[in-house]
Length: 220
Figure (cartoon, rainbow, N blue to C red):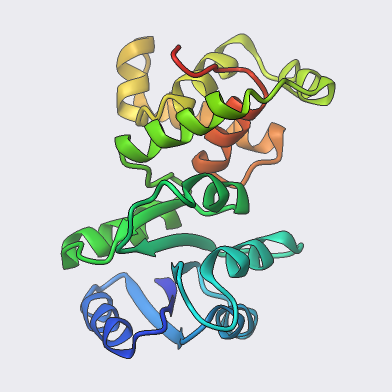
């Protein structure tokens, strides 16, 4: 079972999501929170696998709560950002904070359930427009590659580096397998090794790492 915590300041939204997700045989809603501070506290108590996190909440907003949730050691949940707003203002900061993806609040019940499954499995839920905005932000910042990143990148095999480059372009395992003419399971194994060697949580972090450290540059 995938254990889910829902953090949103609107009670009707929490109730709706709970009804949707509780109908799934592989998902269990273990709790709710009405603000970011409560979300952090409830996550510590309930140890969910996935936190559905609204951005604009009182007391502590969703970005601050995500940062706090994922900054400590030990077992950490995956965070799926919920939004009804344009993403430009916070897509970069949310991914930097450790979020695994974004979901619009008007998503269907099927999309909501699938999004939870995707991030619980360690994949990034990044729509193409989100990835484009992220790339634009890196282009604007012009982040240079630190020397430490070069040393960590050297730990990857040539194939692992190739896979990471394609992951950073937001390709799925199936699409990467097609480009490299290998089995999808082989790609999954390479992705797992990349995450382990670089100390990354999931594909969303891998995308951020690749751009921040110059492995992939905007426009490539």
